[in-house]
Image (cartoon, rainbow, N blue to C red; front, side):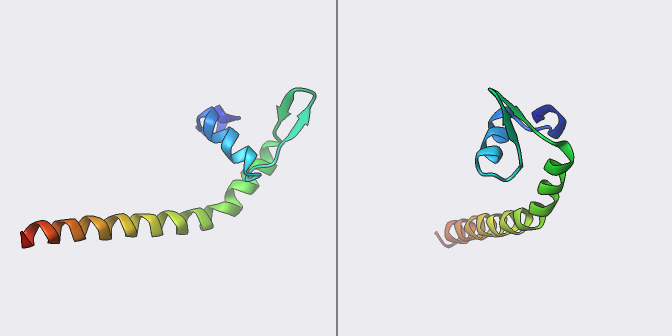
Length: 73
């Protein structure tokens, strides 16, 4: 599944533990229904993009503040 999504195994494990993508256990194997995983990712995309945009805005504001502080010195 990680290869299909282009994710690392750590990211796949993290998303699975967060219940962001559905899976089921079959003995000691974890199974993923691809359609359900794709639907879950699509459903979370808008929220994830909003969080990422907020994070990027904060980084840019900090960067601009550092530039202004250096220019004042």
